[in-house]
Each structure stands twice: as structure tokens, then as C-alpha cells.
Image (cartoon, rainbow, N blue to C red; front, side, top):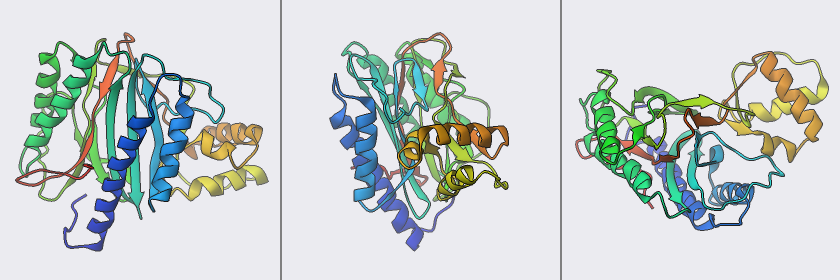
Length: 299
């Protein structure tokens, strides 16, 4: 998305990014050994709403070899201990999205892995100028991560951001993929390096708890129709099982999700796991492409 810096839309975007940054810092302060992961997700999402914004996607907290897309169920008893913790937070105001992520090493043994993605992100941000090819950002990310002795996750990418669309063009690779697509003035992108101690390739695990509306189709069963109406309120943005089970009986939610997946009304986003189960770190900011690139998701 190319955004007019004098527009009301840009004001909404700046607010979304500001609250996304604050929500990420808040989440980081809550991550402590012994605390339930689901409690942190709930607290962060409540924080976003209290700040007058909406949740762009469910708060994701992915541990160790899980790179992304993990979101706990309502009664999940998973707790923090000595894991490598990725926190990914998205906020929107009327569809204008701020997206950021960070890694916390509770083990205190993987600081270099965390540094690798932080430095890769910094190097790529410095290149996010009009006319620069996206493969150049990918090369900078790759080189920074490899310098630390780790592997960039090559089948995960950064991305453009559009209204009610978290993953739009351009794709920002985590290695030099020879993509000659050039960045444009005032373009909105999320740069998102991942580093791994393992394969640097992720696969889809199960079960998925994150979904999004794919296409509208008629539904016959009344309770499935009610759940679908709730899903449609998201305007295509992702949602999680936990949100639905707070409003509808669990058995109805499970049936409805299975039915809607079968009919291809919704799509799922399963947890993404390193192929060799290596530890994974992540860092992300929302960037405005300028001659002097602007980080929008700063506290």
C-alpha cells in the first residue's frame, strides 16, 4: 500500500502502529516462567481494545522450534519456562495495520540467536528506500543471520500491508531470491527476519487455531450461520478458536470450523515448525519506505 502522508488514513495507521508497539512491550513485560501463555495473549488483546484500537490478528506466542502461528486455546495450560519466545502483535484502526514482533530468550542461553534477527532487521530497514530491490533486503537479512552462525528461515517472509490485508505485496524475502521488485516512496511494508539453529525451513504442523474468512457461502445450520456471522465481522482478518469459544459452546465451534474448512469458506494457518526442530527467533517492524526509512512501530 502506498499511503498519503497528509491523509486521515495515515493518522489511523500511525495510531495502530503506536499501539502495536506499546502492546508488544506490554506483552514482553508479562512473559515470565510459570505464567500461562494464554493469560498473556488475553491480556495483550484486552490492552489493544482498551487503547481504542482493534486486533489485526490474534496475539501469537510461538515457542522454541515453532516459528509462528501458534495461538493457545481458551483453556490451554501451556506455561513459560526456559523457552525461546516469539511474540507477534498486530493492531488496526479501521483496517490500517501495525505489525511487529520480538523474541525473548527465557533460557538465557540463546542471546546470539536473538541478536541475529535484531541485527538482520536493522540492516534491512536501512535499505528500505525507494528504488531498492526486495532481493537486496533479503541479501542483507541472510548475511546478518549467517554471520552469527544461524540459518535464515527461507520460506517465511516479510510483506506489504494493505487495508484489512496483513500479507499483501511486496514479499520481503529473508535471503536473496533474485526478486527485482523495487520499493516505492511511502510504501508500507513489514520486514520480518527469522533465524534458526536448525534447517531454516518450516513446515505446517497441527492443529491450527488461527483462521480467516476465504469466501462467503450460504450456510444451512443455524448455529454455524451464527458463528459465521461472527467471523464475517473480522472483514477477512484472522481470528482464533479461543475468541469463538468465549461466545459459543465449544462443540458448536469445533463443528462449525470443520464444516467451514471443508466448504472452503475459511482457511487455516497452522503452527509453523522448523523442519529439524531447531530453535527459531524473530524480529519485525512496520516500515514506511522513504529515503530515510521510517520505523512506525516504535514506542
